[in-house]
Length: 246
Length: 56
Image 1: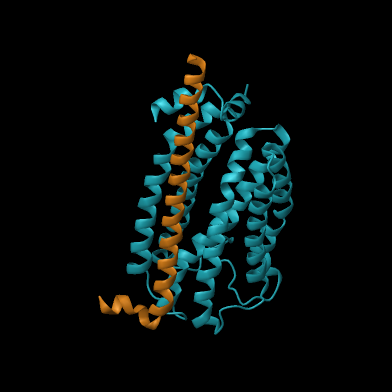
Image 2: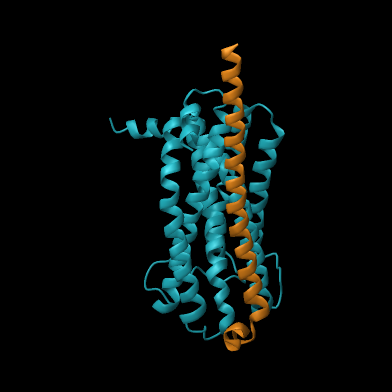
């Protein structure tokens, strides 16, 4: 049946082995893509006609902002899977997302503030994009706080899953905020229909950074989830064998 | 080289962003590795405790 892979994925020993094997396959390409993106973005992309070399902040700001949203969607989706199918591994994935997501949301906010200073003349404005991204940070922190506050693991899983799923409404709000409302923030420059407005020498390093950060996140998530699965399966027999292999 | 570092007058904004990013990226790698190592150590400890208990 087509569902076999799904159940296999939900089996902790299988997940642990698979995650161990897959991690380097995400980590190394991530490093390559980011190296290419950095060299291309800092060295070879032409300066922007309005922002000069200041625009080069985009090569770290956009990937951080992308991760802040994507990690949240991954977290909410796996929390929903865990809730619906009572799948322990899915809850472990969701729990492992929060710290990564929160740190990249903070990074997106900070690099955005630094970028805003020379271009907008201010670090912070209560602008729709900025405010909704700040709310995202609070959602991550609330999720982590809620998990920490509940001692019983399966109750913590369920309660935090509901919070994660409800909070997902914020994701399209963040993405479309620059279109729906007047915002200081520029409109999307990559994820839109039609021809890209950047020359290839600007765009390709940016796409490489976005892909590189995504693969880097997967490697991080696999590592963190392995730790989380080990902690949850404290008394399982398979752990003896898994540890013997390292 | 100096011109590259000057970033067309935006050096004070561009480089802090890159430094912050390197910091967060590196920190996440360290965190994840430390978390996995401590979970493995803890699991090993428990496994050997279980073995001793069953041998008794």
